[in-house]
Amino acid sequence: MQLNPVMLQAAAAQPGGGMMPIFLMVGMFVVMYFFMIRPQAKRAKEQKKFADSMNTGEQIVTTAGIHGRINRANDDGTLQIEISRGTFMTIERSAVSMEMTAAFRKKADAAAGISTTTAAATTK
Image (cartoon, rainbow, N blue to C red; front, side, top):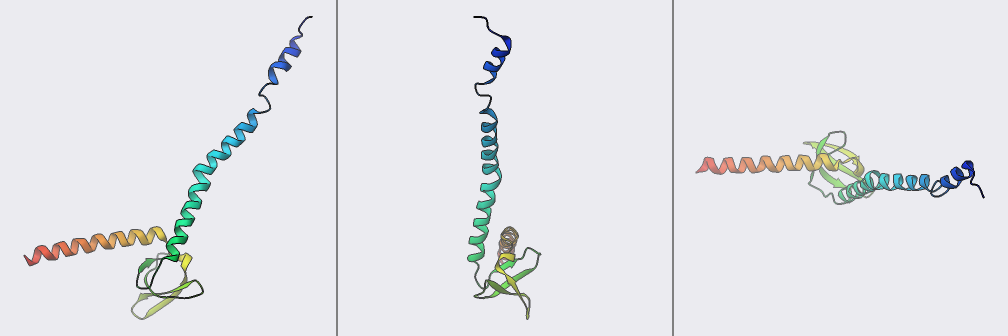
């Protein structure tokens, strides 16, 4: 029996030829999940936890860059913030920026640490 070159090519192309694109697609989905979808979901979960944990008296920064202190937490998911003495504003809880508020608090804590150290050194 003689082997035909066309039959050899067809036989060589069959094993794994149909499965390779499927493995590639599955691999691309796995990469997208671990690098894009999972971190996004984790960040959203942290933002929701942060929004639920806000209490009255805390300094916050909104996503629009407005600084204020929480005066009252309303039952409908809004916050009343005081942006200056006697000036109040009602905002949604989701409008508070977790990253900007954390950076503001860190900066305020560092400034408070510097001022207390300077005051202690001045009194000695």
